[in-house]
Length: 118
Image (tube, rainbow, N blue to C red; front, side, top):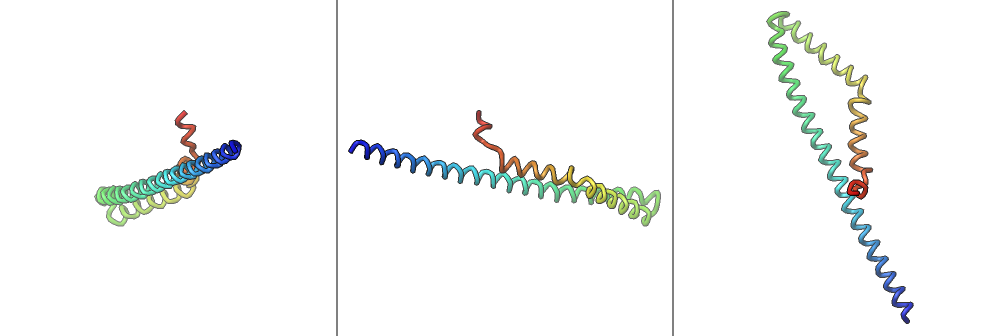
């Protein structure tokens, strides 16, 4: 009789342990998803404001260049600069875009919080 009650107690404790581990996984998964979403939102906001700043600076540079090379020349210079930036971004896309994004996602998904606490 005693052996059955200890077996039942062991099974009950095992079920409780499994339930706690599942809850821990749910919380950890939710934390990782929130981290990734926060990183994506931050990058989107940064990108939007960065594009706005580049537009304002390029227009102010066009107005400055217009004095020296004329309107068509100023817009041509800014267009060429924009194309050079696009080409550089394409050539260096792995180092500038893919690797940092991969690092952020890997940190968000693969980091083990239990090891960080030790």
